Image (cartoon, rainbow, N blue to C red; front, side):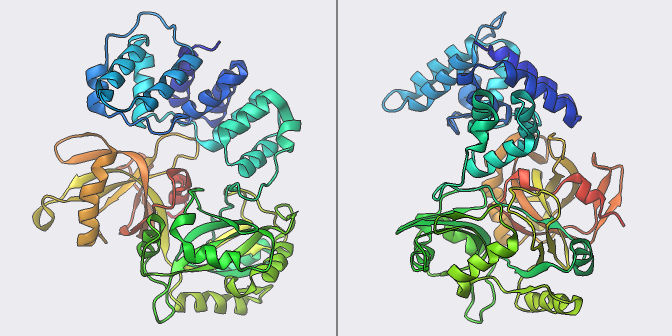
Length: 502
């Protein structure tokens, strides 16, 4: 049985290095010695989460329940996983004291370093740099399975930990057997930023499709018969919140289908409403705003999986099943036609355009540049890692945001700037109520946060600067909107920011 101490040691070594190669080796080493029934918990812990989700224990309870640490390690992965499960099942009268006692027993059997690890795990503040891309490579190294096969299994199952267990216990044959299942969400394919329409077409060639880039929310739709599932880009089930979309999907001329697309609320003029209004519908089925779907890909149709088919073939299937709801697009445009389509998208109130290689298969994540997004304004998705109390008119409100870019090697977000521009009174109120829920600590005027919130920033570029750890600083950054539909793993990297230097 694997000791918790070996997982903690691996976590500390991963956190201590910026080298992706070293991180992968350390993770692979601990996975390769884990027993089959320990792999699930080990992978999830090293990603900074628990199999049980949020345990629901705050700092106050942890502080009061923290006993002196054990002198020697004795806890096993299985014992700790069982203890975490027990904590989630304690409810009812007297549950606070019983949970405190169970937590004290767990922490009392842990060494000082194990206590630190467990507290970080329970509070969601464990950040050791084991991002999904690094973990995927580690699973491949530990199991001897090609990384591309591991990535595909993760895409189709939507479950990194389950894929790790299957890879280590069953090898490549087991992973290759993982298939698309209608009703089980697929990890979405993402686009890379493109510098301009001309350069995107020059890099991809003439065989492309150019589509509107809508200012909406990503959705993935599954249907078998009358059973419909609709999920967000993070694979959260929102089916019950969007009955009008469910009704529309049930009316499509097919028996089974998986579609990728966007949804947004439209004003009476036909122009898109603010993004936040669209997102507000994802929390409740009630609401006066109706959502309109626009699809841009078809991954399955009537028993035929299309993931590995070229995009051009997938678009034929899309036109057949959902033509009236297909996103506006032009196939194999001339440079002038592509530019005109971008102009039309902007004139209609959308963000820009997408340029996609018609020969590309569907691959989860941001793999290569077969999909490129073209936007006229410089924008970045960054992580909020702190916020300062305002002064003057903003006294009493949390105002100035500390912004971090994603470390491509899996470390914590790297600070690249601050901004308080673009914040409306409504956003100031929201920040002051919401952001303290992510607090880790604070000093005289700054509240430091767990890196979980993504915000979209508009800027005029970046410049070399020694002021921030990333070696760059944002120029004239201003808040466009928060992105509850995105995770920190989808934020832009510090390399992307550096590439914007003037």
